[in-house]
Length: 256
Image (cartoon, rainbow, N blue to C red; front, side, top):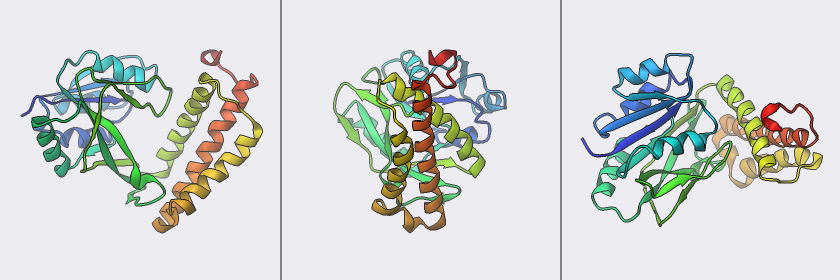
């Protein structure tokens, strides 16, 4: 057992969380699950795995994670999503890194699966995230979706991947696509970016062409085509939400 602490934020992750927690069994001295009032068996699954559970109202991904990080002390912290797994090779690399650290935060590559297949192209092969940090040396910048870690010092790079089984079936992707599109449109408006009908029409085509042709998504066969197509749809929906909000169409109280 090491002095590594693990943080997982959750909402309705009953099916994915057990595998995530099992992948850090014996690696972490403490596992903390911060749950935004799941309505399924997420909390029970976390407790069965020996994790400490706190429930807290969700505001944004960065707010939820920063709130937890501020309470986790000065040691090493590994941040995971419920659909991520620490590979055996990464476990060993984390242990070696903690013994002889050269930075206070580390970027970790991700090995991504889409509908049960590992994706080797379309940009997903270059995916990675800063997830191993020491104490207060890094925090997330405020964002409504796709939050990014901001680090005070240099960032190291690990070589072995997190396994990321992001979308196991198409309904799961479509549900998240709608949620991310809404949050993404709100984020564009929050940052004061310009909206236009041209972006709604042209950005999806640009995303598809980049992923499918320039980043060789076609090499992943039918899975690659579907990934590029739905990713383009998500971009279009995000800009449509932004365009509508800028014109007062369909605003809710949180958009005012």
